[in-house]
Image (cartoon, rainbow over all chains, first blue to last red; front, side, top):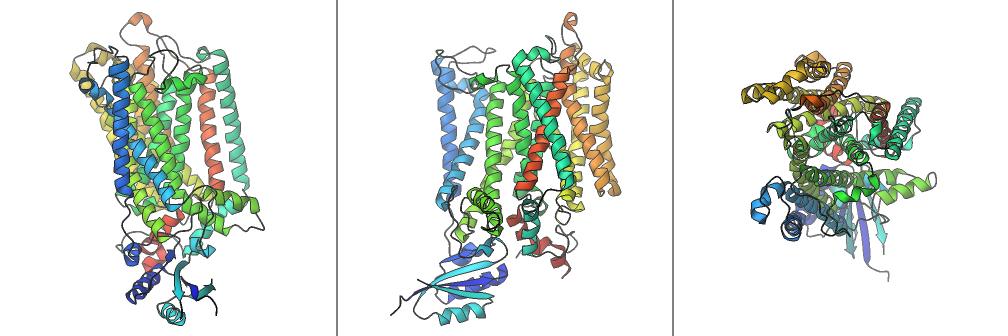
Length: 175
Length: 458
Protein backbone atom coordinates (compact mmCIF):
# COMPACT_ATOMS: atom_id res chain seq x y z
CA UNK A 1 0.00 0.00 0.00
CA UNK A 2 1.29 3.45 -0.86
CA UNK A 3 2.09 6.08 1.70
CA UNK A 4 -1.15 7.79 2.60
CA UNK A 5 0.25 11.30 3.11
CA UNK A 6 -0.67 13.50 0.16
CA UNK A 7 -0.02 17.18 -0.40
CA UNK A 8 -2.68 19.08 -2.28
CA UNK A 9 -2.12 22.46 -3.87
CA UNK A 10 -5.13 24.63 -4.57
CA UNK A 11 -4.29 27.54 -6.84
CA UNK A 12 -6.45 30.68 -6.90
CA UNK A 13 -6.53 33.70 -9.20
CA UNK A 14 -7.96 36.18 -6.77
CA UNK A 15 -7.19 36.98 -3.16
CA UNK A 16 -10.84 37.47 -2.17
CA UNK A 17 -11.80 34.01 -3.46
CA UNK A 18 -8.80 32.56 -1.65
CA UNK A 19 -9.79 34.28 1.58
CA UNK A 20 -13.35 32.97 1.50
CA UNK A 21 -12.05 29.52 0.58
CA UNK A 22 -9.67 29.57 3.54
CA UNK A 23 -12.56 30.42 5.85
CA UNK A 24 -14.76 27.69 4.33
CA UNK A 25 -12.08 25.01 4.55
CA UNK A 26 -11.15 25.88 8.11
CA UNK A 27 -14.79 25.81 9.17
CA UNK A 28 -14.80 22.18 7.94
CA UNK A 29 -12.05 21.42 10.46
CA UNK A 30 -9.42 20.90 7.80
CA UNK A 31 -5.93 22.09 8.58
CA UNK A 32 -4.27 24.39 6.02
CA UNK A 33 -0.52 23.88 6.00
CA UNK A 34 0.53 27.07 4.25
CA UNK A 35 -0.65 29.84 1.95
CA UNK A 36 1.73 31.44 -0.56
CA UNK A 37 0.79 34.79 -2.04
CA UNK A 38 2.41 37.52 -4.14
CA UNK A 39 1.43 40.24 -1.69
CA UNK A 40 0.11 40.55 1.88
CA UNK A 41 -3.62 39.81 2.07
CA UNK A 42 -5.62 41.80 4.57
CA UNK A 43 -7.28 39.47 7.08
CA UNK A 44 -5.56 36.28 5.94
CA UNK A 45 -3.58 35.87 9.16
CA UNK A 46 -6.73 35.91 11.31
CA UNK A 47 -8.54 33.63 8.83
CA UNK A 48 -5.68 31.14 9.08
CA UNK A 49 -5.60 31.49 12.85
CA UNK A 50 -2.01 32.74 12.92
CA UNK A 51 -0.83 34.16 16.20
CA UNK A 52 0.13 37.82 16.32
CA UNK A 53 3.81 38.41 15.72
CA UNK A 54 5.87 39.58 18.69
CA UNK A 55 8.44 41.45 16.60
CA UNK A 56 7.03 44.77 17.80
CA UNK A 57 7.73 43.84 21.41
CA UNK A 58 11.20 42.65 20.42
CA UNK A 59 11.85 45.98 18.71
CA UNK A 60 10.85 47.86 21.87
CA UNK A 61 13.27 45.79 23.93
CA UNK A 62 16.05 46.35 21.38
CA UNK A 63 15.38 50.09 21.54
CA UNK A 64 15.71 50.03 25.33
CA UNK A 65 19.01 48.19 24.97
CA UNK A 66 20.20 50.87 22.52
CA UNK A 67 19.25 53.64 24.91
CA UNK A 68 21.05 51.92 27.76
CA UNK A 69 24.11 51.26 25.60
CA UNK A 70 24.35 54.94 24.64
CA UNK A 71 23.92 56.08 28.23
CA UNK A 72 26.59 53.71 29.54
CA UNK A 73 29.01 54.57 26.71
CA UNK A 74 28.62 58.32 27.12
CA UNK A 75 28.77 58.12 30.89
CA UNK A 76 32.03 56.18 30.69
CA UNK A 77 33.64 58.49 28.13
CA UNK A 78 32.40 61.94 29.13
CA UNK A 79 31.88 61.63 32.88
CA UNK A 80 34.04 58.85 34.23
CA UNK A 81 37.09 58.36 32.01
CA UNK A 82 37.94 61.89 30.88
CA UNK A 83 35.63 64.75 31.87
CA UNK A 84 36.32 67.90 29.88
CA UNK A 85 35.15 71.46 30.31
CA UNK A 86 33.37 72.24 27.06
CA UNK A 87 31.78 75.66 26.94
CA UNK A 88 31.28 75.50 30.69
CA UNK A 89 28.78 72.67 30.44
CA UNK A 90 28.43 70.76 33.71
CA UNK A 91 30.54 67.63 33.34
CA UNK A 92 30.75 66.03 36.77
CA UNK A 93 27.45 64.17 36.72
CA UNK A 94 25.68 62.42 33.89
CA UNK A 95 22.41 63.92 35.00
CA UNK A 96 23.56 67.54 34.60
CA UNK A 97 25.32 67.00 31.28
CA UNK A 98 22.50 64.89 29.83
CA UNK A 99 20.65 67.49 27.69
CA UNK A 100 23.67 67.52 25.35
CA UNK A 101 23.60 63.72 25.16
CA UNK A 102 19.94 63.38 24.16
CA UNK A 103 20.52 63.42 20.37
CA UNK A 104 22.99 60.53 20.45
CA UNK A 105 20.93 58.56 22.95
CA UNK A 106 17.95 58.94 20.61
CA UNK A 107 19.95 57.91 17.53
CA UNK A 108 21.30 54.81 19.29
CA UNK A 109 17.79 53.83 20.37
CA UNK A 110 16.57 53.99 16.76
CA UNK A 111 19.67 52.27 15.40
CA UNK A 112 19.38 49.30 17.77
CA UNK A 113 15.59 48.98 17.47
CA UNK A 114 15.60 49.07 13.65
CA UNK A 115 18.61 46.89 12.93
CA UNK A 116 18.10 44.22 15.56
CA UNK A 117 14.41 43.93 14.68
CA UNK A 118 15.23 43.52 10.99
CA UNK A 119 17.85 40.89 11.77
CA UNK A 120 15.38 39.05 14.02
CA UNK A 121 12.79 39.19 11.24
CA UNK A 122 15.22 37.68 8.72
CA UNK A 123 16.28 34.94 11.14
CA UNK A 124 12.72 34.06 12.18
CA UNK A 125 11.65 33.81 8.52
CA UNK A 126 14.77 31.87 7.54
CA UNK A 127 15.75 34.50 4.99
CA UNK A 128 19.44 34.86 4.18
CA UNK A 129 21.57 35.22 1.05
CA UNK A 130 21.77 31.81 -0.55
CA UNK A 131 18.54 30.43 0.93
CA UNK A 132 16.37 28.63 -1.59
CA UNK A 133 12.71 29.44 -2.04
CA UNK A 134 10.45 26.59 -0.97
CA UNK A 135 7.40 27.80 -2.84
CA UNK A 136 5.79 24.87 -4.69
CA UNK A 137 4.90 27.07 -7.66
CA UNK A 138 6.91 29.96 -9.09
CA UNK A 139 3.77 31.82 -10.11
CA UNK A 140 3.05 32.67 -6.46
CA UNK A 141 5.31 35.70 -6.65
CA UNK A 142 3.47 36.88 -9.76
CA UNK A 143 -0.33 36.62 -9.71
CA UNK A 144 -1.33 33.25 -8.25
CA UNK A 145 -2.35 32.39 -4.69
CA UNK A 146 -1.53 28.91 -3.50
CA UNK A 147 -3.05 26.94 -0.64
CA UNK A 148 -1.11 23.93 0.56
CA UNK A 149 -2.88 21.14 2.44
CA UNK A 150 -1.53 17.91 3.80
CA UNK A 151 -4.02 15.08 3.73
CA UNK A 152 -3.89 11.51 4.87
CA UNK A 153 -6.44 9.22 3.31
CA UNK A 154 -9.25 10.43 1.11
CA UNK A 155 -8.24 13.45 -0.98
CA UNK A 156 -11.40 13.80 -3.01
CA UNK A 157 -13.38 15.56 -0.31
CA UNK A 158 -10.75 18.30 -0.10
CA UNK A 159 -10.37 18.59 -3.85
CA UNK A 160 -14.14 18.98 -4.17
CA UNK A 161 -14.13 21.62 -1.47
CA UNK A 162 -11.30 23.49 -3.19
CA UNK A 163 -12.96 23.52 -6.58
CA UNK A 164 -16.31 24.41 -5.04
CA UNK A 165 -14.78 27.41 -3.27
CA UNK A 166 -13.19 28.70 -6.45
CA UNK A 167 -9.73 27.17 -6.96
CA UNK A 168 -8.72 27.54 -10.59
CA UNK A 169 -6.25 24.68 -10.52
CA UNK A 170 -5.73 21.71 -8.18
CA UNK A 171 -2.53 19.67 -8.10
CA UNK A 172 -1.36 16.92 -5.86
CA UNK A 173 1.93 15.48 -4.79
CA UNK A 174 2.28 12.07 -3.17
CA UNK A 175 5.05 11.71 -0.67
CA UNK B 1 -11.05 44.44 0.46
CA UNK B 2 -10.62 48.14 1.05
CA UNK B 3 -13.13 50.41 -0.62
CA UNK B 4 -12.38 53.87 -1.85
CA UNK B 5 -14.59 56.83 -2.78
CA UNK B 6 -15.42 56.85 -6.49
CA UNK B 7 -14.62 60.51 -6.93
CA UNK B 8 -10.98 59.89 -6.04
CA UNK B 9 -8.82 59.70 -9.14
CA UNK B 10 -7.32 56.29 -9.91
CA UNK B 11 -3.65 55.76 -9.08
CA UNK B 12 -3.07 52.98 -11.61
CA UNK B 13 -4.17 53.75 -15.14
CA UNK B 14 -5.06 51.36 -17.93
CA UNK B 15 -6.52 47.91 -17.90
CA UNK B 16 -3.97 46.30 -15.57
CA UNK B 17 -4.04 42.89 -13.91
CA UNK B 18 -1.65 41.57 -11.27
CA UNK B 19 0.33 39.88 -14.00
CA UNK B 20 0.59 43.15 -15.96
CA UNK B 21 2.13 44.83 -12.93
CA UNK B 22 4.66 41.99 -12.69
CA UNK B 23 5.51 42.33 -16.37
CA UNK B 24 5.78 46.12 -16.38
CA UNK B 25 8.04 46.18 -13.32
CA UNK B 26 10.32 43.41 -14.63
CA UNK B 27 10.59 44.86 -18.10
CA UNK B 28 13.43 47.33 -17.45
CA UNK B 29 15.39 44.57 -15.70
CA UNK B 30 14.85 41.94 -18.37
CA UNK B 31 15.09 44.14 -21.45
CA UNK B 32 18.01 45.94 -23.03
CA UNK B 33 18.82 49.57 -22.28
CA UNK B 34 17.76 52.05 -24.93
CA UNK B 35 19.83 54.78 -26.53
CA UNK B 36 18.75 57.50 -24.09
CA UNK B 37 19.82 55.42 -21.15
CA UNK B 38 23.30 54.98 -22.61
CA UNK B 39 23.61 58.69 -23.39
CA UNK B 40 22.57 59.70 -19.88
CA UNK B 41 24.77 57.02 -18.36
CA UNK B 42 27.87 58.07 -20.31
CA UNK B 43 27.37 61.71 -19.37
CA UNK B 44 26.87 60.89 -15.69
CA UNK B 45 29.79 58.51 -15.57
CA UNK B 46 32.07 61.11 -17.23
CA UNK B 47 31.03 63.74 -14.67
CA UNK B 48 31.56 61.22 -11.90
CA UNK B 49 35.07 60.40 -13.07
CA UNK B 50 35.93 64.10 -13.29
CA UNK B 51 34.63 64.49 -9.74
CA UNK B 52 36.78 61.60 -8.56
CA UNK B 53 39.81 63.18 -10.22
CA UNK B 54 39.13 66.46 -8.39
CA UNK B 55 38.73 64.56 -5.11
CA UNK B 56 42.04 62.77 -5.69
CA UNK B 57 43.70 66.14 -6.41
CA UNK B 58 42.24 67.56 -3.18
CA UNK B 59 43.41 64.65 -1.09
CA UNK B 60 46.82 64.53 -2.76
CA UNK B 61 47.52 68.26 -2.52
CA UNK B 62 45.40 69.56 0.36
CA UNK B 63 42.27 71.60 1.05
CA UNK B 64 44.18 74.66 -0.23
CA UNK B 65 43.10 73.77 -3.75
CA UNK B 66 39.58 74.83 -2.79
CA UNK B 67 38.38 78.44 -2.65
CA UNK B 68 37.99 78.30 1.16
CA UNK B 69 40.05 80.78 3.14
CA UNK B 70 40.63 81.72 6.80
CA UNK B 71 37.40 83.70 7.02
CA UNK B 72 35.20 81.48 4.90
CA UNK B 73 36.34 78.16 6.35
CA UNK B 74 33.19 76.36 5.33
CA UNK B 75 31.89 76.90 1.82
CA UNK B 76 30.82 74.64 -1.03
CA UNK B 77 31.72 71.47 0.83
CA UNK B 78 29.12 71.90 3.55
CA UNK B 79 26.68 73.60 1.17
CA UNK B 80 26.74 70.46 -0.94
CA UNK B 81 26.63 68.25 2.13
CA UNK B 82 23.46 69.90 3.47
CA UNK B 83 21.91 70.01 0.01
CA UNK B 84 22.37 66.28 -0.57
CA UNK B 85 21.21 65.32 2.92
CA UNK B 86 18.13 67.47 2.43
CA UNK B 87 17.33 65.78 -0.86
CA UNK B 88 17.34 62.45 0.91
CA UNK B 89 14.58 63.52 3.28
CA UNK B 90 11.73 63.25 0.80
CA UNK B 91 12.43 59.55 0.28
CA UNK B 92 11.97 58.81 3.96
CA UNK B 93 8.93 61.04 4.12
CA UNK B 94 7.31 59.14 1.26
CA UNK B 95 8.21 55.69 2.53
CA UNK B 96 7.72 56.22 6.27
CA UNK B 97 5.50 59.17 7.08
CA UNK B 98 3.07 58.51 4.25
CA UNK B 99 2.92 54.84 5.29
CA UNK B 100 1.84 55.88 8.77
CA UNK B 101 -0.80 58.13 7.21
CA UNK B 102 -1.90 55.24 4.94
CA UNK B 103 -1.44 57.27 1.76
CA UNK B 104 -1.92 54.91 -1.16
CA UNK B 105 -0.20 57.16 -3.66
CA UNK B 106 3.15 56.48 -2.04
CA UNK B 107 3.15 52.90 -3.42
CA UNK B 108 4.26 53.71 -6.97
CA UNK B 109 6.99 56.10 -5.97
CA UNK B 110 8.39 54.95 -2.63
CA UNK B 111 11.01 52.55 -4.03
CA UNK B 112 12.65 55.18 -6.24
CA UNK B 113 12.31 57.87 -3.61
CA UNK B 114 14.12 55.63 -1.12
CA UNK B 115 16.80 54.87 -3.69
CA UNK B 116 17.22 58.61 -4.11
CA UNK B 117 17.59 58.95 -0.33
CA UNK B 118 20.32 56.36 -0.15
CA UNK B 119 22.25 57.67 -3.16
CA UNK B 120 21.82 61.28 -1.96
CA UNK B 121 23.04 60.54 1.56
CA UNK B 122 26.02 58.68 0.08
CA UNK B 123 26.98 61.86 -1.84
CA UNK B 124 26.52 63.94 1.30
CA UNK B 125 28.77 61.64 3.32
CA UNK B 126 31.59 62.19 0.82
CA UNK B 127 31.97 65.87 1.73
CA UNK B 128 32.93 65.66 5.41
CA UNK B 129 35.15 62.77 4.43
CA UNK B 130 37.08 64.75 1.81
CA UNK B 131 37.16 67.86 3.96
CA UNK B 132 39.03 65.90 6.62
CA UNK B 133 42.04 66.14 4.34
CA UNK B 134 43.22 62.75 5.56
CA UNK B 135 40.20 60.55 4.86
CA UNK B 136 42.05 57.43 5.98
CA UNK B 137 41.74 58.79 9.53
CA UNK B 138 37.95 58.97 9.25
CA UNK B 139 37.54 56.40 12.00
CA UNK B 140 38.57 59.13 14.46
CA UNK B 141 34.97 60.36 14.39
CA UNK B 142 33.78 57.21 16.14
CA UNK B 143 34.25 56.56 19.85
CA UNK B 144 36.76 53.75 19.39
CA UNK B 145 39.21 52.77 22.14
CA UNK B 146 42.63 53.80 20.86
CA UNK B 147 46.33 53.83 21.60
CA UNK B 148 46.47 57.57 22.35
CA UNK B 149 45.31 57.31 25.96
CA UNK B 150 41.94 58.81 26.68
CA UNK B 151 41.39 60.44 23.31
CA UNK B 152 37.64 60.45 22.92
CA UNK B 153 35.15 62.20 20.68
CA UNK B 154 33.10 64.99 22.24
CA UNK B 155 29.50 64.01 22.87
CA UNK B 156 28.57 67.65 23.54
CA UNK B 157 29.33 68.59 19.95
CA UNK B 158 26.67 68.76 17.23
CA UNK B 159 29.31 67.54 14.77
CA UNK B 160 29.41 64.23 16.64
CA UNK B 161 25.61 64.19 16.84
CA UNK B 162 25.73 64.47 13.08
CA UNK B 163 28.02 61.44 12.80
CA UNK B 164 25.54 59.36 14.76
CA UNK B 165 22.49 60.84 13.06
CA UNK B 166 23.77 60.32 9.54
CA UNK B 167 25.13 56.83 10.08
CA UNK B 168 21.83 55.81 11.69
CA UNK B 169 19.83 57.50 8.96
CA UNK B 170 21.83 55.93 6.15
CA UNK B 171 21.88 52.41 7.58
CA UNK B 172 18.22 52.40 8.65
CA UNK B 173 17.20 53.70 5.21
CA UNK B 174 19.16 50.90 3.54
CA UNK B 175 17.52 48.28 5.76
CA UNK B 176 14.03 49.69 5.24
CA UNK B 177 14.62 49.72 1.49
CA UNK B 178 16.00 46.22 1.41
CA UNK B 179 13.25 44.64 3.54
CA UNK B 180 10.78 45.94 0.96
CA UNK B 181 12.94 44.81 -1.94
CA UNK B 182 13.15 41.14 -0.91
CA UNK B 183 9.68 40.09 -2.21
CA UNK B 184 10.25 42.05 -5.42
CA UNK B 185 13.63 40.48 -6.05
CA UNK B 186 11.89 37.13 -5.54
CA UNK B 187 9.35 38.07 -8.21
CA UNK B 188 12.17 38.83 -10.69
CA UNK B 189 13.99 35.62 -9.69
CA UNK B 190 10.92 33.52 -10.41
CA UNK B 191 10.49 35.05 -13.85
CA UNK B 192 14.09 34.42 -14.92
CA UNK B 193 14.68 31.23 -16.80
CA UNK B 194 17.50 28.98 -15.63
CA UNK B 195 18.33 28.18 -19.24
CA UNK B 196 18.38 31.64 -20.78
CA UNK B 197 19.99 33.62 -17.97
CA UNK B 198 21.41 31.26 -15.34
CA UNK B 199 23.80 33.83 -13.87
CA UNK B 200 21.11 36.46 -13.46
CA UNK B 201 18.74 33.94 -11.94
CA UNK B 202 21.45 33.01 -9.46
CA UNK B 203 22.08 36.67 -8.65
CA UNK B 204 18.43 37.51 -8.02
CA UNK B 205 18.10 34.30 -6.06
CA UNK B 206 20.90 35.49 -3.77
CA UNK B 207 19.36 38.96 -3.49
CA UNK B 208 15.89 37.62 -2.67
CA UNK B 209 17.11 35.67 0.40
CA UNK B 210 14.91 32.68 -0.50
CA UNK B 211 11.64 34.59 -0.17
CA UNK B 212 8.56 32.52 -1.00
CA UNK B 213 5.61 34.63 0.23
CA UNK B 214 4.32 32.52 3.10
CA UNK B 215 1.42 33.95 5.07
CA UNK B 216 3.41 34.14 8.31
CA UNK B 217 6.23 35.93 6.51
CA UNK B 218 3.83 38.47 5.08
CA UNK B 219 2.35 39.05 8.50
CA UNK B 220 5.81 39.76 9.91
CA UNK B 221 6.73 41.80 6.83
CA UNK B 222 3.80 44.14 7.40
CA UNK B 223 4.60 44.63 11.06
CA UNK B 224 8.31 45.19 10.39
CA UNK B 225 7.47 47.79 7.72
CA UNK B 226 5.12 49.56 10.10
CA UNK B 227 7.60 49.61 12.99
CA UNK B 228 10.44 50.73 10.70
CA UNK B 229 8.20 53.53 9.43
CA UNK B 230 7.45 54.50 13.01
CA UNK B 231 11.17 54.58 13.79
CA UNK B 232 12.18 56.35 10.58
CA UNK B 233 9.67 59.17 11.07
CA UNK B 234 11.25 60.75 14.17
CA UNK B 235 14.64 59.79 12.74
CA UNK B 236 14.21 61.85 9.59
CA UNK B 237 13.14 64.88 11.61
CA UNK B 238 16.08 64.44 13.95
CA UNK B 239 18.63 64.21 11.14
CA UNK B 240 18.08 67.61 9.60
CA UNK B 241 17.46 69.18 13.01
CA UNK B 242 20.90 67.98 14.02
CA UNK B 243 22.42 69.18 10.73
CA UNK B 244 20.95 72.61 11.47
CA UNK B 245 22.49 72.52 14.95
CA UNK B 246 25.94 72.37 13.35
CA UNK B 247 25.17 76.03 12.64
CA UNK B 248 22.66 76.99 15.31
CA UNK B 249 24.86 76.08 18.28
CA UNK B 250 27.65 78.36 17.07
CA UNK B 251 27.74 82.11 17.71
CA UNK B 252 28.03 83.32 14.12
CA UNK B 253 25.48 86.03 13.22
CA UNK B 254 22.82 84.53 10.96
CA UNK B 255 23.43 81.03 12.31
CA UNK B 256 22.69 81.40 16.01
CA UNK B 257 18.90 81.04 15.82
CA UNK B 258 16.40 78.64 17.36
CA UNK B 259 14.25 78.56 14.22
CA UNK B 260 16.89 76.52 12.40
CA UNK B 261 15.72 72.93 13.13
CA UNK B 262 12.13 73.26 11.83
CA UNK B 263 13.28 75.56 9.04
CA UNK B 264 15.92 73.07 7.87
CA UNK B 265 13.57 70.10 8.05
CA UNK B 266 10.97 71.89 5.94
CA UNK B 267 13.60 73.03 3.46
CA UNK B 268 14.85 69.46 3.23
CA UNK B 269 11.40 68.09 2.43
CA UNK B 270 10.85 70.90 -0.05
CA UNK B 271 14.07 70.19 -1.97
CA UNK B 272 13.67 66.43 -1.64
CA UNK B 273 10.26 66.40 -3.26
CA UNK B 274 11.59 68.57 -6.07
CA UNK B 275 14.35 66.05 -6.73
CA UNK B 276 11.88 63.14 -6.61
CA UNK B 277 9.85 64.93 -9.28
CA UNK B 278 12.87 65.67 -11.44
CA UNK B 279 13.86 61.99 -11.34
CA UNK B 280 10.42 60.44 -11.71
CA UNK B 281 9.27 62.62 -14.59
CA UNK B 282 12.29 61.38 -16.55
CA UNK B 283 12.03 57.80 -15.29
CA UNK B 284 8.35 57.27 -16.06
CA UNK B 285 9.16 58.02 -19.70
CA UNK B 286 12.46 56.16 -19.98
CA UNK B 287 11.25 52.91 -18.41
CA UNK B 288 7.59 53.13 -19.47
CA UNK B 289 5.89 53.60 -16.16
CA UNK B 290 3.29 56.12 -17.30
CA UNK B 291 0.43 53.97 -15.99
CA UNK B 292 1.87 53.91 -12.48
CA UNK B 293 3.43 57.32 -12.00
CA UNK B 294 0.50 59.48 -13.00
CA UNK B 295 -0.22 63.18 -12.99
CA UNK B 296 -2.13 62.57 -9.75
CA UNK B 297 1.10 61.49 -8.02
CA UNK B 298 2.84 64.57 -9.37
CA UNK B 299 0.00 66.79 -8.23
CA UNK B 300 0.10 65.43 -4.70
CA UNK B 301 3.82 66.13 -4.56
CA UNK B 302 3.27 69.63 -5.93
CA UNK B 303 0.85 70.31 -3.12
CA UNK B 304 3.53 69.30 -0.61
CA UNK B 305 6.04 71.53 -2.43
CA UNK B 306 3.59 74.43 -2.28
CA UNK B 307 3.03 73.89 1.43
CA UNK B 308 6.67 73.42 2.41
CA UNK B 309 7.78 76.22 0.06
CA UNK B 310 5.37 78.63 1.71
CA UNK B 311 6.54 77.56 5.16
CA UNK B 312 10.17 78.02 4.14
CA UNK B 313 9.24 81.50 2.88
CA UNK B 314 7.62 82.23 6.24
CA UNK B 315 10.82 81.09 7.94
CA UNK B 316 12.90 83.50 5.81
CA UNK B 317 10.67 86.40 6.80
CA UNK B 318 10.64 85.32 10.45
CA UNK B 319 14.45 85.34 10.39
CA UNK B 320 14.48 88.87 9.02
CA UNK B 321 12.03 90.02 11.65
CA UNK B 322 13.93 88.34 14.46
CA UNK B 323 17.23 89.88 13.43
CA UNK B 324 15.67 93.34 13.55
CA UNK B 325 13.76 92.61 16.75
CA UNK B 326 16.83 91.18 18.52
CA UNK B 327 18.44 94.61 18.60
CA UNK B 328 21.82 92.97 18.00
CA UNK B 329 23.82 95.02 15.56
CA UNK B 330 25.82 92.09 14.16
CA UNK B 331 22.69 90.02 13.61
CA UNK B 332 20.98 92.90 11.84
CA UNK B 333 23.96 93.53 9.63
CA UNK B 334 24.19 89.84 8.68
CA UNK B 335 20.74 90.03 7.12
CA UNK B 336 21.18 93.43 5.50
CA UNK B 337 24.42 92.10 4.02
CA UNK B 338 22.69 88.97 2.72
CA UNK B 339 20.05 90.92 0.87
CA UNK B 340 22.06 93.94 -0.28
CA UNK B 341 25.75 92.99 0.11
CA UNK B 342 28.08 91.59 -2.55
CA UNK B 343 26.20 88.26 -2.58
CA UNK B 344 22.79 89.88 -3.11
CA UNK B 345 22.34 87.85 -6.30
CA UNK B 346 22.55 84.56 -4.38
CA UNK B 347 19.90 85.84 -1.97
CA UNK B 348 17.74 86.92 -4.89
CA UNK B 349 18.02 83.50 -6.56
CA UNK B 350 17.10 81.84 -3.26
CA UNK B 351 14.05 84.06 -2.72
CA UNK B 352 12.85 83.70 -6.31
CA UNK B 353 13.24 79.94 -6.63
CA UNK B 354 12.05 78.98 -3.14
CA UNK B 355 9.39 81.52 -2.30
CA UNK B 356 8.04 83.01 -5.51
CA UNK B 357 8.04 80.37 -8.26
CA UNK B 358 6.50 77.54 -6.16
CA UNK B 359 3.50 79.83 -5.63
CA UNK B 360 2.63 79.13 -9.26
CA UNK B 361 1.34 75.79 -8.01
CA UNK B 362 -1.81 77.56 -6.78
CA UNK B 363 -2.80 77.44 -10.47
CA UNK B 364 -4.36 74.06 -11.24
CA UNK B 365 -3.12 73.87 -14.82
CA UNK B 366 0.50 74.31 -13.71
CA UNK B 367 0.12 71.90 -10.82
CA UNK B 368 -1.22 69.24 -13.18
CA UNK B 369 1.37 69.66 -15.90
CA UNK B 370 4.43 67.45 -16.31
CA UNK B 371 6.36 70.09 -18.23
CA UNK B 372 5.73 72.88 -15.71
CA UNK B 373 6.45 70.58 -12.81
CA UNK B 374 9.73 69.52 -14.33
CA UNK B 375 10.83 73.14 -14.88
CA UNK B 376 9.73 74.29 -11.43
CA UNK B 377 11.36 71.30 -9.74
CA UNK B 378 14.70 72.34 -11.24
CA UNK B 379 14.08 75.87 -9.92
CA UNK B 380 13.56 74.45 -6.43
CA UNK B 381 16.73 72.36 -6.66
CA UNK B 382 18.71 75.47 -7.60
CA UNK B 383 16.98 77.64 -5.02
CA UNK B 384 17.65 75.23 -2.19
CA UNK B 385 21.32 74.94 -3.10
CA UNK B 386 21.56 78.73 -2.96
CA UNK B 387 19.75 78.80 0.37
CA UNK B 388 22.57 76.80 1.93
CA UNK B 389 25.18 78.91 0.12
CA UNK B 390 23.57 82.09 1.45
CA UNK B 391 23.38 80.79 5.01
CA UNK B 392 26.95 79.54 5.03
CA UNK B 393 29.03 81.92 2.94
CA UNK B 394 27.28 85.25 3.50
CA UNK B 395 27.28 84.70 7.27
CA UNK B 396 30.97 83.92 7.37
CA UNK B 397 32.43 86.36 4.89
CA UNK B 398 31.50 89.40 6.98
CA UNK B 399 31.12 88.71 10.68
CA UNK B 400 32.37 90.52 13.80
CA UNK B 401 35.79 91.75 12.71
CA UNK B 402 35.79 93.95 9.59
CA UNK B 403 39.56 93.52 9.14
CA UNK B 404 39.02 89.85 8.32
CA UNK B 405 36.14 90.45 5.91
CA UNK B 406 36.73 88.81 2.60
CA UNK B 407 35.06 87.29 -0.44
CA UNK B 408 34.76 83.67 -1.44
CA UNK B 409 34.86 82.25 -4.93
CA UNK B 410 35.04 78.57 -5.85
CA UNK B 411 37.95 77.06 -7.74
CA UNK B 412 37.59 74.54 -10.54
CA UNK B 413 38.12 71.82 -7.92
CA UNK B 414 35.10 72.94 -5.87
CA UNK B 415 32.97 72.98 -8.99
CA UNK B 416 34.41 69.67 -10.20
CA UNK B 417 33.66 67.87 -6.96
CA UNK B 418 30.10 69.20 -6.85
CA UNK B 419 29.41 68.23 -10.46
CA UNK B 420 31.11 64.91 -9.74
CA UNK B 421 28.64 64.09 -7.00
CA UNK B 422 25.76 64.93 -9.33
CA UNK B 423 27.29 62.54 -11.88
CA UNK B 424 27.84 59.89 -9.23
CA UNK B 425 24.24 60.23 -8.03
CA UNK B 426 22.79 59.87 -11.52
CA UNK B 427 25.15 56.99 -12.34
CA UNK B 428 23.89 55.10 -9.29
CA UNK B 429 20.29 55.96 -10.09
CA UNK B 430 20.60 54.86 -13.71
CA UNK B 431 22.21 51.56 -12.70
CA UNK B 432 19.45 51.10 -10.16
CA UNK B 433 16.74 51.72 -12.76
CA UNK B 434 18.08 48.85 -14.88
CA UNK B 435 18.71 46.25 -12.17
CA UNK B 436 16.19 46.85 -9.40
CA UNK B 437 12.39 46.55 -9.37
CA UNK B 438 11.75 50.32 -9.51
CA UNK B 439 8.20 50.00 -8.21
CA UNK B 440 7.29 48.21 -4.99
CA UNK B 441 5.14 45.80 -6.99
CA UNK B 442 4.00 43.63 -4.07
CA UNK B 443 2.66 46.66 -2.25
CA UNK B 444 1.23 48.15 -5.43
CA UNK B 445 -0.77 44.98 -6.09
CA UNK B 446 -2.57 45.47 -2.77
CA UNK B 447 -4.14 48.72 -4.00
CA UNK B 448 -4.91 47.63 -7.57
CA UNK B 449 -8.53 46.78 -6.74
CA UNK B 450 -9.22 49.93 -4.76
CA UNK B 451 -7.27 52.42 -6.88
CA UNK B 452 -6.87 50.85 -10.33
CA UNK B 453 -8.80 52.72 -13.02
CA UNK B 454 -10.38 49.58 -14.43
CA UNK B 455 -11.69 48.43 -11.06
CA UNK B 456 -12.92 51.89 -10.14
CA UNK B 457 -15.02 52.12 -13.28
CA UNK B 458 -16.74 48.80 -12.62
